[in-house]
Length: 266
Image (tube, rainbow, N blue to C red):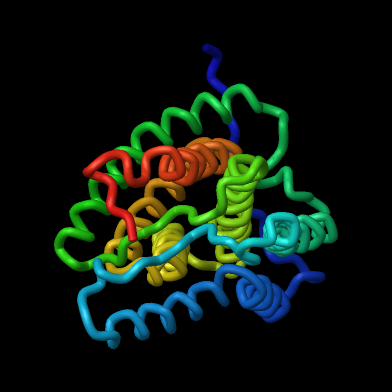
């Protein structure tokens, strides 16, 4: 297999993009997306730890029904939620286009689709199993809530919605937390080490609603993803890996919940 060499293009701050403008832009993008999710996760975690009983006795549902007993209305809400969650990605693409580079600067395109998928599958295989073991251990130690990947009704659109939700999560997180955030922090003069810490802490923080295990596990994943991005210069493999991990989690839970003893259920 031929090796594709791509460098991460960070860019510099020019006269038209002052530091204050970039900083404000970055904060607004985060406030409209995963930064807001991090605040919500913190509030949720405070509610969980102050609730009587252990964390593992509480549940965190990732993809749940929005209109129980009304499947068509539920489907409309699911599609609406997936579509609106991707608006910040469209905003980032718009901002990068105005900058004159476009979203391709972070390797979010189809130029090396085969390599992105192969690399993504390898990363997913390595992280997915490790992540599952870490979650089971954290839950057993009462550091984590019981994660319920899905609680959708058994209707024809269940699996397609779960796959679409997995892809949406992957695109949103990798484009913003890796590609966009690292670019802007680099332009603002942050060191590579500081930017890595910021990206991984942000990734962990919006998973805090799952418990300490969700925080620590996703911070570790964030470190790995930043290092891989700097090596490959593309978020494409990271999007593929993340989408595969979430798809297996969502669809796997739908197929196995209540049928195997090792998989915790609410």
